[in-house]
Image 1 (cartoon, rainbow, N blue to C red):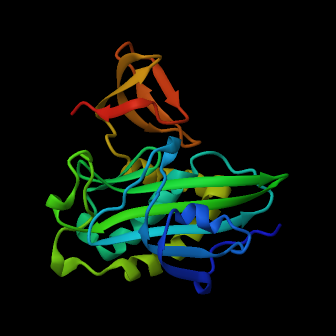
Image 2 (image 1 turned 120 degrees about the vertical axis):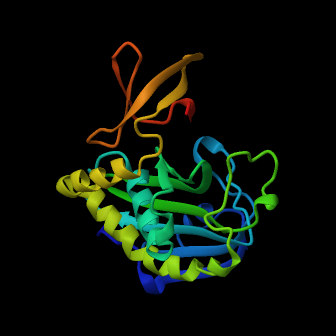
Length: 252
């Protein structure tokens, strides 16, 4: 398989589907295809959680990428997160200080989750098919958020700054391709990790998490070379996570 990144001309726009990630896995959609839906009735997040896209304007996106010689390191969701941040901030530069990446796959604006990323893969030998799913709550009113989604929010609540989905999408496609190439390249990965550390939510703050059923605390120091999360415990020990620990949240 040759490396096939997202092709701008291979976009498909649909009204409704259960899950754009599930839909684009079908063999009828070749590598390079991407799908945008107006509605998703059974959106999925990591660890089989549901993902609800909210508001009057949203971005529900999945892209299908084919890679050969698949030997890149972990942390792809972080690189996709930086691509999404770059696309959003190019349209909403006023959000520069507030928009952050919650390790490993969410975007937060202040204390509210505004976007989620779900990456799935199908590996065959040294080749892989990557399915990149992105959901963003672009615009809506705070009172429209269900009570059970206490940390959910919108990228924008100002009606005069709404209607930016197509503009963000146009900038997102090439940035996603760039993110894949950076992720595959060891030197590119190091440079992007500098930006990732700048965008990392709760960096330098005290955080809490659960390990083997026991509550733990530490200070979030940053990201390792392979995108691992580095915490420093009260005893001074360093803990590296390759996946998000249970009940991971800030104490600040």
